[in-house]
Amino acid sequence: MPSPSVVIVCTSADKFGSDGHATGVWLDELAHPYYMLAAAGMEVTVASLQGGEIPVDAGSRGAAVPDFYTDVAKKFDADEKATERLKNSKKLTELSPDAFDAIYIPGGHGCCADMSDDAALKTFIEKMYADGKPVAACCHGPVALPQCCKPDGTALVSGLKIAVFKDAEEADVGHKDRVTPWLLEAKCRELGADLQQVDNWNSKAVRDGNLFTGQNPQSSVALVELLLDAMKQTA
Image (cartoon, rainbow, N blue to C red):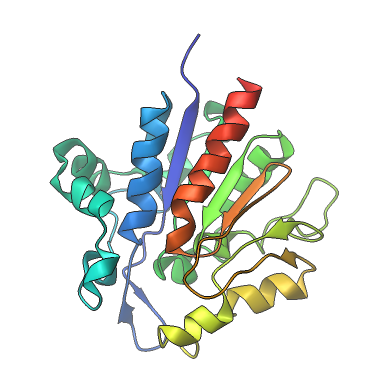
């Protein structure tokens, strides 16, 4: 029996906001699922919207706050195989949702620039969700969700318990006025999501059916654990 296959889909944007603020994927949120899923025997594919090299937010390498450059992020940077995948990610449009058992979307403010209205990502998520496969997104990764619909045509997040990067956390990092086209928490509330939240910068991961979400970078481990538990139950 082949190993379960998970695709990690990252942003391709290296800037966001009207002032072109430098950004990318948040490295810790990529590194944790990469290693945890592989350790659990999953086949991991690293992809991005445009393919090729995935930009990394300098903040996740300790440019501003050294504690953000976690041990697992450092491990990823020192791992030749991992960095090769980062430099040569698969392009999402060249992949089929039928080839994977789950999708995981790490955050980083780059998601705000290219994931809120990406047609290929929308189709990919909707197909996997409709097929009952786990759809997981952490921090700003859920920016990809408001555009998506359930099979009945209603908003994917409507009526579901989810955790996303809080507007208050956005204010903490000084990007509340930079994020477009909308603030993630506010948009999800508008669509009828049942927001599950904890204090800023604490871990919160939530599962509702086959949708899995995490509030912030601190939630990535708990989110992957929820995903792994679910995949083991259906193996």
